[in-house]
Image 1 (cartoon, rainbow, N blue to C red):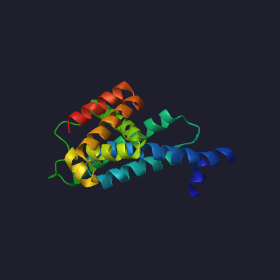
Image 2: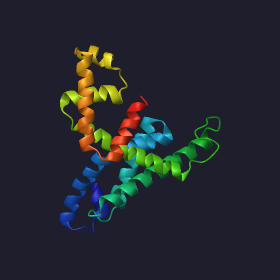
Image 3: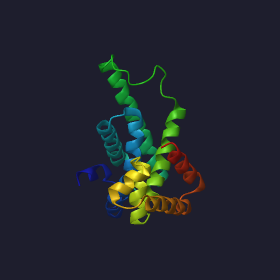
Image 4: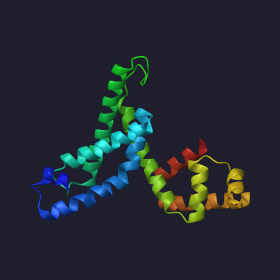
Length: 193
């Protein structure tokens, strides 16, 4: 790979391990970072570009493939945030008539909240993926797509009681799979639908 030129000082073992670790980080954090970037940019394509650029920056700047996941995650979130802010500043100069931000700059507090929200949603989505197929399908339709019980029943050709039972079963399983704080966040999210 051409990118190895940036990692020439690494041993052959490290050179072989780095792409696998990088792929694992990409698979684990891509969706979370995309949601995080979208919170600032509100454009999925541009947010996607920001996330890809952050991963490219990580690839090019990482001199130690054994660096722990926390450092890699922090690097990626910080990089995405900075890329988003840079994009926003550029847009404000190019398009003065279009308001991207409120008159107040984005507060650091808001950034931290969005990181936490992205991580919590990532854990919820990950837990939903582990549910049995019928629970997973009905949970996604209800909680992620916002469909009503009757709409789900009609689309799947099942009774409304089956929908309710599967949703109840899904919540019981999610309660076992999620931390109490994450489960509470899920219940709050559901109550706002």
